[in-house]
Image (cartoon, rainbow, N blue to C red; front, top):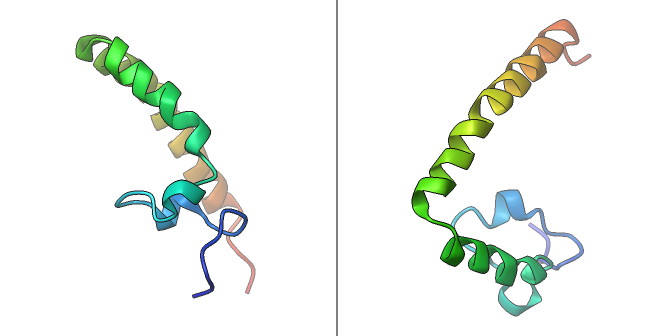
Length: 75
């Protein structure tokens, strides 16, 4: 695997167990906002936001699966 840099990293894959770049993280600018949101928002409200987004995410997932089934990769 090549060296991880802010320009080449795929955070969704590389950082599943925590940030691997530390101070070089390309997403550090969002940490303060996320921390403020978590500290200032009651847990019940966070859970409601998650519950409200579930149907939309589920439908999007079903649609992606339908598109994959209709357009299988060519070999």
